[in-house]
Length: 230
Ligand SMILES: [Zn+2]
Ligand SMILES: [Zn+2]
Image 1 (cartoon, rainbow, N blue to C red):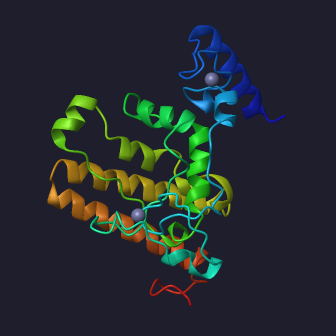
Image 2 (cartoon, rainbow, N blue to C red; image 1 turned 90 degrees about the horizontal axis):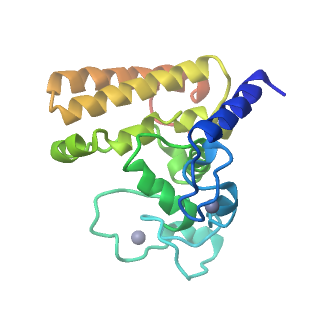
């Protein structure tokens, strides 16, 4: 067993004694803090998408249709058309442990590791797997002051999707560059919230630099960043 796992177990044990977390669904004790506010058994009962479901290719809504695999990217629900975004993907339906985790994120600026793992899996599916930047949606100043934090920023910072699961290419340079991008994105979000154009410009430059430095070795085989390889 790795030392970090031992520390984690000890920490979980101590935490259970000091701050017993009661599952917000079944009221039993939550065994590990990686699960957040619900227990392992409630997580097991929570439906999580596998990626094979038929969904609206734009908003991710679960649909009944069963199109041939080649046409999956042409399925639309018809309701999200006027909305200004390219694609959204859910971990699963808004129910059970997922619903509790979303609600908790409005109260506490923390994403449990269990949810991070699901987020990373979703980010690996098309079309999100071709995305190159993570920029949190700014929260209205009034709302941000009332809540004390922007939960989109918390999501972007949460160990980050590039730094968990199978996206990790190595533990050295890859992690360093991913961290640089998260830091730059956080600066951009803060600048956007403060409506500070100069700071936003600097943060955008930092994001661009981190993109270029990472794409060159990891995606473009040493070429300068340009159009993605066909
Ligand atoms: Zn439970
Ligand atoms: Zn839709």
